[in-house]
Length: 185
Image 1 (cartoon, rainbow, N blue to C red):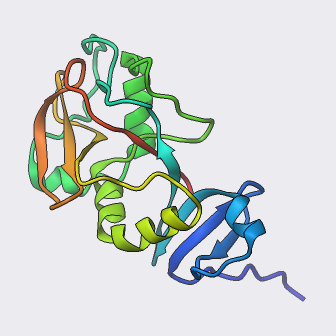
Image 2 (image 1 turned 120 degrees about the vertical axis):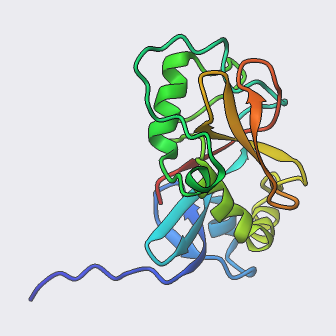
């Protein structure tokens, strides 16, 4: 008999410290609530784990200094291409080469979401907020968040979670804002 892995349904999950995924019901057990490490979000082929708290205790620049890397060709300077960016993990690797702000603390496997990933979170923000509230996580306030999508050597895109407004004219090394880490589902 072939071992068949069951596909998870679309929805919101409490991702446990052992990596197991429990559908969020709003009446999960105390063990599932206290053992939650991430909020999981799955829709079709898209899935992501969302950290329970921001990656910096205070608003922070994205990078510690100016981008002096050579040969990086993945800047996205137009809105349509930027919203289609789902490469948060790769983008974050470049930001690490530049030097992330010392205020940003990412655990192993975590990265800063791209615009596509953060818009995915924004789309299901109400349900994610309910799950965060349930596990005593930090709710997403009605402010803009840094994305890992870079507009140029100097600028990175931010997304306003309150209304979905996207802005690419934010200097990575000097503007301060919140950062929420994500990881693979």
